[in-house]
Image (cartoon, rainbow, N blue to C red):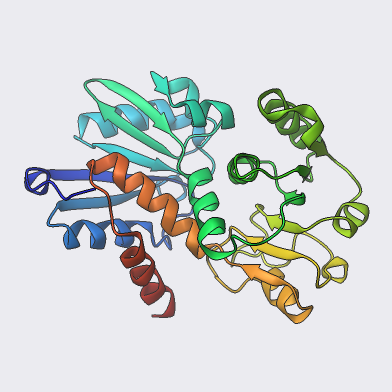
Length: 290
């Protein structure tokens, strides 16, 4: 997409809405790419934890953001699903997922999108396009897990096994996606030992591995060299799961690429300009190493 010089004269105000987001790299990633493209681009954090608020305060927060002139918001835990009833319109992908991570404010309307699934799919395609997807095990059925499941099915995964500590949530996601992609392709709450023994790959879409949630979402002794292992956690990039997987000879995919590609998708929605995803990945790597 060619850079439109008329866009670069716009001033954009966007933000990240969620809990415990002070360490997020997203604001700097967006602002730096905006500067590279000649935009006056301001990206703020709206941290529920810091403000002493909860997801139930979303109605007031959205009204405040609109009144303050925000062009849009990225949305993260715990708001990706709770925000949907407060929107006027939801994209087809976001509706299928039941989760929104990007909201645009346009002419008095709130329009929800989801770039998380696209971010995972693009990261997988660019980094490990040759891996088998006949059977993939997904750990986590929340907003992140929904996006990964959708991405895998859109990427032609043959069979998807969804596991979650909340079995009801896993079954609900399986049923929801089964209605769209075919119930025979999706299984919920299978025994993890049996599932991994027949899997080509496994994806961690739980918070396990984050600095605030140390550990792994599965017993690492179940990993074997025939598996590829992906994690959507990117803080830190080197999670305990990925370290254990590499030690056992597995190919691995960290969460940095998904974080960058979903940000690139959101940037495009906010600005109408195609960002340089490779440049954003370099910026991200500099921030993580710094």
